[in-house]
Image (tube, rainbow, N blue to C red):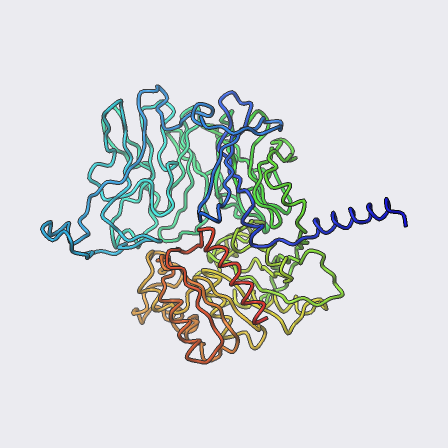
Length: 632
């Protein structure tokens, strides 16, 4: 016996075994979550955060690192502001701007009756009494201007929010280049008016006069993300139509004299985020295209009569998930794909070539089997070519048969690109032995305005045919076990699951719906943002003259098809989800139970539309795969 050879074989076996291990929920929740912070003032290094879940304490730990622009060994830093600067300090260094909550409205019994301090009651006379995951408490986010020990509320007694709720950040307010103004984002509507509209505006507060001016009064949709260049030109993102949260989002610039929409001419472009170039001549932005999110540039003509020129800088089966900053001819970006969590990369602006800068999860991925990700194009029932992402298990063998999951994306207009989710993780699903079919069905951004908008007021129409076209095309493959098909999704994807459960004609063996709309009529009476309901479904259910609204509560209402449910269903809901409230899940679970259908309710009392705490997330993953193992 050659013991040296035996030892070598053993080493090869151990190494191949390590490489071949599949992703598990525990491994997924050990990965570092990388987020760019900025480029140092001297232009030599990049700062980034790494957030790591702490399962035992049910929390997260975040550390900030600095790494040279050309790569190298990262070092931990604690003095972030001194390295990259603080953009909330005025250019002359005299003032700072910040935000804090201000109590302006009476809500609690003790507000109205101070002598009844132990009462437990909330009193409302307007809508928006709860939003996203929080009940209205009478406090509003306001911007404050501070000089030494004094501060001034820029919004005074206005019952409006900046940062905007529920997802606003300090980026909602910025200094002008000359330091004479603060520009902030605000929807200056209250209560019922607020819930019916998306009309946010940009407001400029003059430091010297104390006067506030509405800079975007002429536009009735969203105006957000203000940013000045070094010459004092103001850029922002803008949607035209009030009430439509997924309208085409364009990049607008004003030099104080004229406004220019730089991207309106390109039907494919709807911008997610942007930043000015260092030379002020261009702006870089991200936009979904053909099932991915890519980096673009657009020229800024200024006062010239030249047309803006849009260029796509990057391309490939990956997402550019964020722009961190620019250093000379390179951009620092966050990049991800369905097999990899975000890492930072440098991008050569001239040719789009990329180089990985951070390597936070390299060692973990070196031991995890990767999925094959495939583009397919499927003919829809109206003869369109639809992109369908197919994700295969690691070590896929086409001679075997695999259970297959149809994934239904939310939104309904959220793009289905090369994102990496820590809950709806395709790599993890595939690692558990499933083929994933993820169609870029009607409503997805990146395929033109018409494709994107066709889902509105047609939730149960062509899009359902798109889903079924995708899974029916995959059923023709010999490696798909047609007796073991499942259907899963969240939000609008959860609605899709409920709806397909009533019309699938025995295709699927099991269903999983998370935070889905089950009954469109009761949804109209319990959700928070009414502009969404009105745009997507046409209006209130009591308007008998409104054909779209009536179709929503009849033809497109999943609850009307419960009598046709014939497969097990797992129903998941967050107690603090006021976008798709608990009552939706309760109705679906009750209907399934009373019909004698195998069903389970997974209820997270403290979670909202998402599942964010580490231990809850792991329970979610285990219940998800246990259900599939049990029913598929």
